[in-house]
Every structure is written in C-alpha cells, then in structure tokens.
Length: 500
Ligand code: G6P
Image (cartoon, rainbow, N blue to C red; front, side, top):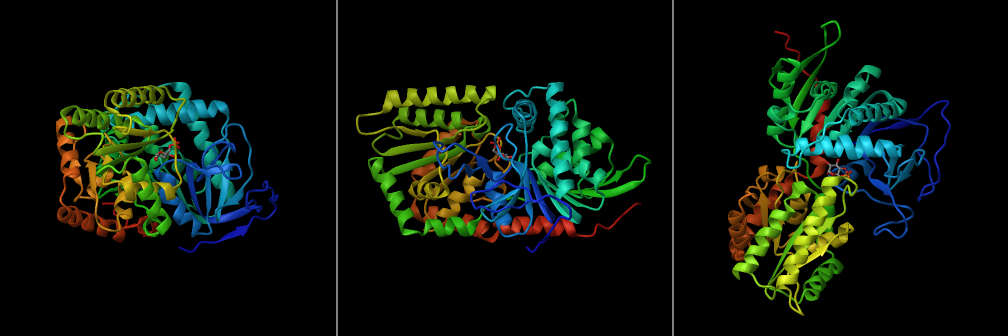
C-alpha cells in the first residue's frame, strides 16, 4: 500500500530521541491507524525482551497490524504503556508513532476499568461479571476524545483513519464531527455480543452511535457484524438494509452510510514460515524436546493469562487424562505459556492464583524426579522462541471460551511447514470459521475436550497431514496483508445510496 505524509507547516519539530535517533513529529499523514496501544511499550532494562527502553506490546492486535504499518508511510497513534510519561512523536521499527498520554487515573478508570472490567467481559459472553461505573464511563469518553484530538492534529485533508478495537469505540463519531473530510474505518478485534447481552450496558446507545460515525465497521465473524446491526436497530432504531445504516444528523438528514462487514484477521505468514525454516530455530525446537526429557508427545498452550482463554478447562481436562492414565508424564508434557496481562484487574489476579494453584496441584501429584506434567511459563517470549515452541509441539491446544479470532492457532498452523502436528481448536474462537480441518470442540464439555485431546495425541500421520495441508492452504491464501488490503479497499468503495 502506498501512502504519503508531508511536513506540517508551523509545527515544532519536537520528539525526543528514540532508539533509532530520529523524529516523526510535525507531520501530516494521509493514513493513520489508531489503537489503545502502540506496537511498542515502555519497559525497564530488567524486563524480558526490553531493548533500549522499548519492547513489543502484547496481544493479537499488534501482531496483526505491525507488518502492515512497517510497509506504509502512515502513522500509528496510541498509548506507549507508561502512565504519566509524555513522549513526543517518534519512529521505531520503521513506523512513525504518535504517543497519546494516559495519567495514572486514566489507566485505572479508562483502561483497567471501562475497557477491561466493563467492555471486555461484556463482549466475551460475560464469562466474568462486567462492572458498570459512571466514573469509568466518564473517563472512557474523555480518553476517547484525547485519541480523536491526536488524529485531528496529525491527519492531512481527506486522510484515511483506521480506528482499532473496543477501547476506542467513540472515536469514529468524534472524528466525523470534527473532520467530515476524513474517511473513517473501525475494526473490532474482539467479539461483538448479541443485543440480549449488550443490552446490559447503560451507555449502549452512545457506543453504537460512536461506531456508526465510521464509514465501515469491520468485525472478525459475520455473527459479530450481525449482532452489531441488530443492536443498532434495537437500541437506536436504525434502519438497517443489506448491512448498511443511513446515519442521520441532528436535522434528520442522512450524513453518511455506515456499513458493517466481517473481515477475519490473519497473521504475517511470510515471517512465521521463514522463521520456521531457519536451522537455528529448528535446532532450538529439538533442544526444547530434549530439555523436557524427549517425551513422545509435547502439547502446547500459548495465551495471554486471560479468563477468556479457557486455561482452567484445559488444565482440568489434562489433569483428568493423567488421573485416568490416558497420558503419563513419561510419555507426554504440556507446556503452558501464559503471558502476563492486565495484572491489576481483579479478575486477572484471581485467574492467576487459580491457574497457578492448579498447576502446582497437578505437578505435585504427577511429577517424578525426571518429569514434569505441566511446564508453566508466566512470561512473554520473542517470536523466534514462539516459533521454536510451535515446531516442538505435536499438539496445540486452543480452548478459548470466547475469542475474537485467536492468532496463536494461525501461527501454529503456519509454522508446521512439514504438514504434521494437530490443532485442537475451540468452536468459540473466530479462527474456527476458517480452520475447519482443526479438531474443533466445545471447551465447556470436559469429556469432549479430553476425547479430542486424545484424538490429537493418537492421530495417524496421514490424517494429520491431510488436515494440516488444508489449514495451511487457507492461511497461506489469506494472510494479514490481504486482510488489511480488503478492509481498506472496502473502505474506499463508493456506497450506492438507496434512499427508498
Ligand atoms: C487483545 C485486544 C487488544 C489488546 C491486547 C492486549 O488482543 O484485542 O486490543 O491490546 O489484547 O491487551 P492489553 O490490555 O495488554 O492491551
């Protein structure tokens, strides 16, 4: 994709020195991505993966968007992860970054509160109870305004702005009001709940109204787009025709047409495939197997430590398989990578205690001097180590109770360049819509999950290869570049106005 940016007249060329020693201040951009997090996060030298004060931000959103942004001339607007630290625009990893500051209060009320203790559980099937607090909502509005202002300040006339995810749902409308010249897209990386659940939100109308400020609202699954449209109809009385809403201004005139559609996100296939073929990564995978005592089967789970991921269900099923003698610690090892996430939010603290208690219980019961049942790693790892883990794993376990997409599933399949290995995949992850040859199951059904894990462990090479080939083809044909190109092409499309 080709975009341009030009120097902004009169603006001061600020910007503090960056790891690369250059500045990206005072520019006007004709393409901007806006997300709560920038692709890099402030860190301390002792943090793992920290280089020159920065490390890669957690989560699927950054995994998906970073490859596109390194290939454009656009800018990325977002928070840099350090409360109360002001940083001026800078460049990093080939991307122009425009930091938005959050105070300690903003982090507590807007980020940990409204985003991650109200919206996150509400949008994920209320797996944890959402909390509704008016102070959190006030902060959400205020911070959304700050992100919108940052865009307004840096966007060239007629620029395309692509707003990302549930933390910024009010930004599209704020942008349209301030800058009707902009083309505005929005993509929701997480599920959108059915109206019956969305109804609980005291501010449901404002959220729908905020999103309808966009020309195009993208979702992971067509069911998410359908849920959104049903909510627009039910809570705003919008008339929805063929996935389009004619959005009305204050005087009842149509200001624009907002469309909603599914665009399933993907990964940087080239990066993962190339890493998977590197001799040193293949060697590292063999080393991992040796370090575990060369078991016949390595099972792997890789998740942010989040209650949506079904880690407890996975551990329960695995513990029962050990108890039933279907797997033994000599023959099998489960590696669970749980990367730290949202650690000050109550539900995440409780989850960590529970998961770590369960792992301790399983290992205490089944470990021997030589073998460990569950190798639990509460860390984040660089992509090279992740690919080595994918190569080492005979069985990948993705047991999410609800997940927008789950890019780990797609990364695992992409790394299996020999077409071996088995993917156990929850039907509640968006990836199940595309990876139909995975062993798809319902993680709430513990017996079903146990049977599926055993099918994966015992799968014959011919069947594994047939399934993996078909899944690999799907992902190789639909990588993340195609995802962004499809979304941006749809955003550009002229919408035919049907006022009848
Ligand atoms: C998910 C969300 C992202 C979020 C990421 C990490 O992938 O869709 O918006 O950035 O999790 O969560 P965090 O709260 O650390 O940003």
